Each structure stands twice: as C-alpha cells, then as structure tokens.
Length: 64
Image (cartoon, rainbow, N blue to C red; front, side, top):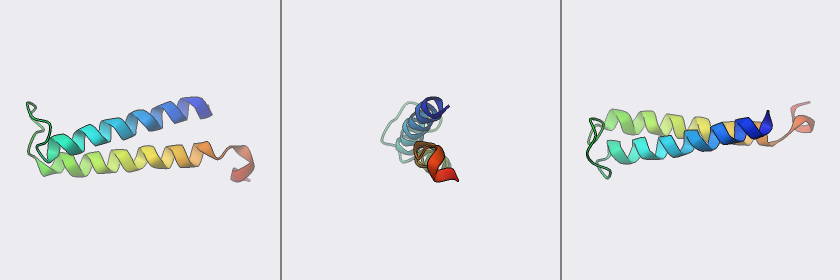
C-alpha cells in the first residue's frame, strides 16, 4: 500500500505542476492555458500529493 500511495503522490505532484504551468500560461495550447483557476487547482493537487508522500512514507511505526 505504501508503494501505491507513493506512486499516486508523485503523479498528483506532476499533474499539479502541469496545471500550475498551464494556468499561468507557461504551457500553452490547452483550454486551461492562461486561467488562474487551474493554477490554484494545480496547487491544491500538488499539495495533496506532497501530503500523501509525507503521510504514507512514514510507515506503520509513526502512525501509532
């Protein structure tokens, strides 16, 4: 379960970064380009990914 959660966390971070870059119009060619809403959504997704990595990366001993 830890490995799966780590992979999902990394994927969420990457998707969040892409959304942030599209929202601030660095990556163009999408309906998301230049819309700040997607930057904020991307930030939230990336933070969720970091939280998953930190929480599930600790292991069972830290949960108790």
